[in-house]
View (spheres, rainbow, N blue to C red):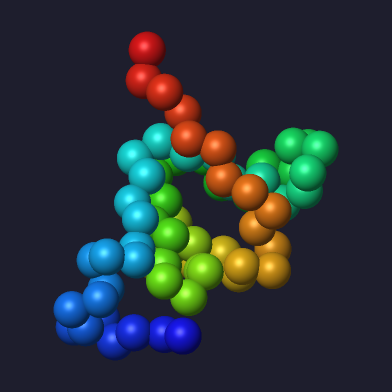
Length: 67
């Protein structure tokens, strides 16, 4: 299900992570992105610069804890 950007549901299902590592495989060998991301309601992951990672390409996302 996809919600329009002006939908009242947009902010409820999207998640912004300030410091994350996006992996393309379970072994954590394939790093697709490091840094801030926004996970959209439809599963796509937005990275800085207006680029998007497909839900099929992303295996999992780890958040980094600031030290």
